Amino acid sequence: MDDEFEDLHCLWDGSERWVVDRYFEDETVVRIFFSAGRPTVREVVAIRKLLPEYRDLPPGEVVRRLGSTGSMTVDAMSTARAGELTEHARLLGLVTETIDASHIGYMPIRLNDEGQPDLMRKYEDDEVARRVCERMLREGVPFYEKQGRDGE
Image 1 (cartoon, rainbow, N blue to C red):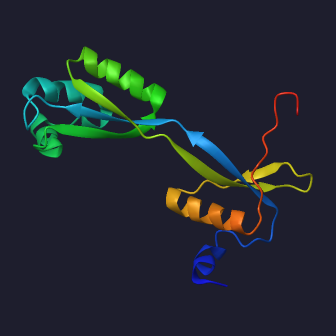
Image 2 (image 1 turned 90 degrees about the vertical axis):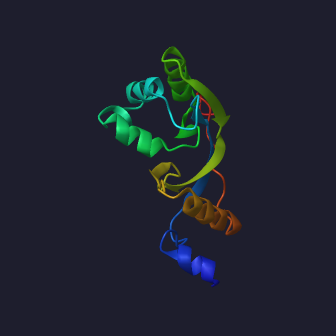
């Protein structure tokens, strides 16, 4: 066994029947721009209204956290949520940019004795999930075949 497999062996040892699900994750990152290097008072007020994690912070702490780079980036979120956030930001007078962060994800699914999905294993670390699934595919584990509404 190679070292990579040794590292992944505790996550998947090949002893059960698994398939690999490949799915599309539709995500967007939102960047908010400030009119100067540091956010203005109006922009700090808007950020505190827009983002819950800043809501209860004193304005000076918000300015300190946002720094002087002229913008801030909000973590990736569903594209629908990003649309809502950018619209709310616009209504608050903020200038935003959206960045497509969509990607293909992989998730191992254990099958029961009847060949039906029994357990989906979601890894917290996308890189670990990718490595485990790549190893599974190299070892001959098939992709999960999703059935249509009529079971076809």
